[in-house]
Amino acid sequence: MPSLRLQSFSPIFRRRVSTEALQSSLHKKLTSRRPNTIFDYLSPTPSHLLNLSLADFLPETCYPPGFPTENLELPHLARHKASPSSVLPQGHHLVYFSPQVPSSKLLPDGTDPLQWPGEPFVRRLWAGGALLFNNDPNNRLGLDNRRAYCREHMPNVLVKGSQGDEKVFVNIERQIGYCGNTSDTAGPFCGSGAGSTIEEDRQTDADAEFSPAIVETRDIVFMREKSIAAIKEDISRPVKILKPSLIPEFSVSLTPTQSLLFRFSALTFNAHAIHLDPQYCREVEGHRDLLVHGPLTLVLMLSVLRSQLKDGEMVRRFDYRNLAPLYANEELRICVRKDRRAKGNKYDVWIEGKEGGYAVKGSAIVEE
Image (cartoon, rainbow, N blue to C red; front, top):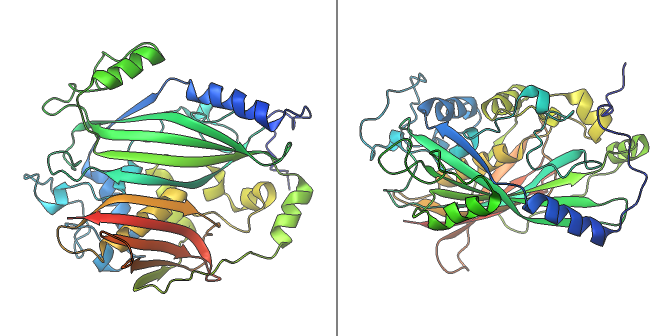
């Protein structure tokens, strides 16, 4: 059987650079990149296909309002903005604003190079992030076929680990909103008036009077290629299990399948091999099976949390960290518990792997 090593990348770097110098170099390199703007039309179709993909895995109480439970065909476009079916469900923005990169520009593992720090950091994982929703009815995104933007940049880069075994944590901020209030081409970032330089882009940001519907931060960790010895060691090493100290008030158990991962990869225009190729996972990444997507676990947590909220309540902020891998064909449990010790309306949300340990740990602030 042919080797699946990342042959298209250059050989593993032999030259050593101090962690401090690497931190300084990568921070300057990535944070100075021009912001990337992605446009999309908020058609109901991607959101509906996401609902359809999850329908066999979640109970009906976790479905978004307006999703049909008997006739699963795409519903008619809602005529009124106040209709439940006209609102983009929280978390469903993740199947819009896909990276617009041709296949020839993808890296050997199928990922896009937009936030890539460069070699020798040829592996990546989703480490966590946060979501901030603007729940003003006049600002929320709807499934109304309007043109919208996603503006993303990298405000921070952090290098951790010892020399030669560094991990590069890239912080990405994404602002998402409509292209103006009354016109498909009016508004910030959506016409032909974007700056031609980073400084002009930032001035455009400062001058624009707008409030994004969603502000998302993502933390992506980039790592060096694993040696064959390290891969064998990872596969044989016992799994570390951190048991949750909380008892959930509500939970949903499900087993993600290979077909679910494929569908989510397709919906997000994501060709990363860790979600699609089991042999690649074992031989290159040292994982026992396909990895569940970080954004898919985020959608699952928001879906289960939604089932526990009162009418009119919506998530204002959601923070999460990915602590351990989740694999296809292995049961996971999504757990929710209201934090009655905290001020305000706060929930603990987490996912347990098949051994019962933390895989994802999150918290939500809810408002009416």
